[in-house]
Structure formats: C-alpha cells, structure tokens
Image (cartoon, rainbow over the protein chains, first blue to last red):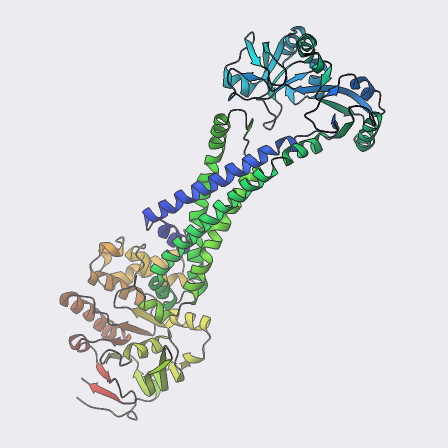
Length: 386
Length: 243
C-alpha cells in the first residue's frame, strides 16, 4: 500500500465517531436520492415502456369520457390499422376505499394479443376466455391480497353502480421489471351485459381504443385518419401514440414530480454542506501535520491529495452502502405504498447517478480545505494548534 | 568566553550556512514589526550551534529562514554554496527534503503512523525501494535507541521517545543540517538530557551540523557554540564560544 493511501485510510479511521456520523448522513442522503429518483422514474415507467407502434384513441374532450364501442369497427377499417382492442377504467373498491388498485374491463382475446408484455400462461388465458365473470390479476396484486385461482372477489363500483363479482382465473407476470403487475383485468362483455340492465346509458361504451398499426412510418398518418373519421361526430376522438398518451397522463402530476426531483437534489446539497464542514474541521485540526509534511519536503499538492483522498473515500463508502440499500428500501416502499407504485425498480441509471452524486460530494467537500492546507505557510501551519 | 564581532566570521570551506544582510519583518494588522534587521553571520560545517534569546527576539525566525520554510524580505541565505532564497517553492521543497532534518518542540509525528512508518516517511520522497527504506528507518531508530518500539504509534510512546523518533526521522535522509526548535521544551529533565545527548552524538560521531533554538541554558550547554539574539537590537549579535 502506498504511503499516501495508508495515510488516507488511517486518517479516515482516526475520528471514528465523526466518520461514522458523516457516513450515516451520506448513506441516508444517497439512499433518499436513489429512492426519490426511482419514484420519479417509476412515474415515467409507462412512458418508457410505451410501444411505438401502438396508438391510443380517446374522447377528444377528456380521457375520462367514454367512446361508443361501435367505433371499433370503423377504426379497424382505417388504412394502416392492423388490429384494435379496447379497455375501460373500472375504478372499483375492494373491501375498503384504501385498497386501491387499477382495474380494467378489456376485450380479453384481442387485448392479450396486443399487449404481449403481460405474460399470461396458456391455461390461465383459456380459463379467462371461458369464464364470463373471469378476471386475471398481476403477480404483485395477487401477492398483496392473497388472490388465488378460483377465488371469488367482489368490487364495489364507483363509476359503474352496484357490486361486481369476479372469479380469479389466474395470475399474470410482467415481461420486464417495469411492467405493472398490480392490475386486475376482467371481461368487458360481462361489464356491458350487466350495464345493459343496471345503467343503460353506460352500456356499449369503452374508455380507450388501443390501435396496432402496420408500419411505424404510418403512425402519424393513421392517427390523423382515425380522428378524421370521427370529426364532427358526437364524440370526436383524439388519437396519439401510447407514449404521448402516457406523457399527457404524467404531465398532470408534473408539479409533484418536479418537487420530488428538487427534494432529491436538496438532500444531496445538504449532505454536501455537512461533509464540507466535516472536512474543513478535519483539515483545520491537522494544519500542523500538513505543515510538517510540507516542511520535510512533501508538495502542497500531496497534502491536498491527502484531504481529497479522505473525503472521496468517505463519500464512496457512504455512497456504496447507500446504493446497496436502495433496492431493498425501494422494494419495501413499493410494498407499503400498495399499488401506488406498482414497481419501484432501481435502474442502472439511478445507481450511476447515486455513485456520481457521492463522488461529486466527496470532491466538492474537499475543495476548500484542500486549498487552505495547500496554501498555508509552513511557519503558520506549524504554529497551529493540533 | 569570547565575544565575536560580526566581521569576525569563519571563511572558505569551513562555512556551511551563510546569512548575508538578512532582514525579516512581519505584518501585524497595519503595523510592520521588524524581527531581523540586516543580519550577517555564518555557521560552520559540523557545528552544533545553540541560538538563544528571549521570546520575540527572532531566533525561531532565523531557524525557519535557515531551514528554508520561510523567506527573508532582504538578503541572501547560502547553504552548502546554494542560495536558497533564489529557489522557487517546488525546488525549495526538494531542497529541504534532501538537505534539512527537522526536530520540533512538539515532535510533529503523524499520529496514524507507527514509529517506523514515521521515520520512513521522508524516504518516500526518494527513489529508494521499499526494502531499503525499511532498512534505513530501522537503522535510524536503532541509532536513537528505539529498535524495540518500531511498531508503536506515537500515542503509545512517551514524550522523550516521540522526540527520539522525530530525531530518527530527521536524520534518516542523511541531511546536510539538522534544525531543532526547542527540542527539549516539552520534555522532563531526564528525557531532555537523553535527547540532547543523542544530538551531541550525532554532531560529534556523525559530523551532523545542528542549529538548535532553545530557552534552556542547560540544553544550550550541550552545543559547541551559543549565540544570543537580543530583542530590540536586531543588528547586534553576541556570540559565546564555549570551546
């Protein structure tokens, strides 16, 4: 081990309490930064996971307003459209209103064909298609509420009146960690059949059409053509890419996301100030040692590198522990937040950002003490109290 | 005891350190405080010189100038024929590493390094390999009688032992001159005596030139020459020859 590294490593361990407290601060800061960044990223997960060839057609006034189911045939007839399916937000309550999770009424066969990111085993698919009251649930949701195939669950409708019973046909998984497995899908034909009896005005309507286009190059033309079909109708449409739709959805909460992002950087700034204070205190206490080193021939640069090395080493140790703790903490947070965050997957980008933040904190915190120690006159440093 | 005038200076090859017309002042707020004024004197090779004088007389300042850790406002300081006042900072650091061994009042050892590692520290600036560095550091520690304390941290050593480690660190590079600022100022009488005897031995047996600042007459008595620097009359230098 080089003399420099030896001095750096031993200096880190010199004031164990101080180093430990600084490390705790760093760990918490890097962890908080990582979790907050993950929350923001998760919010955008739908945007990142959007399939470029999929379009979503919704009511032009608002996506909360429905469209006639009859539009499906006319959309299918538009040139460049390969297939069309639909989904409707159900918004039911399971036992208690705090048990929120997304529920969608879908055209089962066409929807599962168009959304291959939902991994549905063949036997589950067969059961789902054959059971009118059937529903499939994502792995996370099944785990949270203990749903098993064969269970009959009841949801209280908020948009669609009455109590609704569903038979759990099975569990689906996500193709990648970003796929939301906290959802429940059931058959739209079951919903519609009941609505025809209970609430005729809501029958034969769907929330959104999902459109698969033949060629990526024709995405813009197809969306325009679909909207053109319904121009001047009672329910005009707005067709946009899945990505644009998701961005529009996320934009509604943009202020919150910006706040979270700002807070994540504020946390880093605070720990930078704490770390800079620690390093300044450390360097001030050791001025006589630095002066001694300079007196016996070590350069001001060597002395500065001692401080830099110590600061960066502490920052990297704290950063590494913070990074290591982020996935379990994010997973726990996802569990605690029920279905608000279906997945809190810590991305490589987030890990890199955390490592970079730790490194930057280590470097910036050392700058002023480095400058001071390198510039102090030897005779003044030798007079300094240790 | 002989009192020498400024002009009564050793000449030629005898001279190791020559201060010529050296002035130094410090700024205290708006006030400029002169410490040394047009001082000229020489130090011989293999000399053990004690610099005495009251507090504020400028003896430590003079030591700092000789050691190259401070620079004069005026005049030149030549050590071994080289005018160190002309050296830029980086070269001056190299020069100190090669030519000066420091012994401080409070030892100034690195608290996180063992005695052996402290002594080895200046050698890391040389081209010596690790094994050679270790061997030399061991030898230096044996010269000050601390072969059995190599793995001890400074906090595990007494004041006298720490100062002996500091002496070992000062001599390990075989410097031209040893400068000692109140080397016994923090020690009890017995430890001070041991440290001074080691310094005396280094001077007598190894021919080390030593410049020592001290308040203590007993410590100064171990030197070959004692010089008094009087406060308030910086141009006047009194030299006492004990030999």
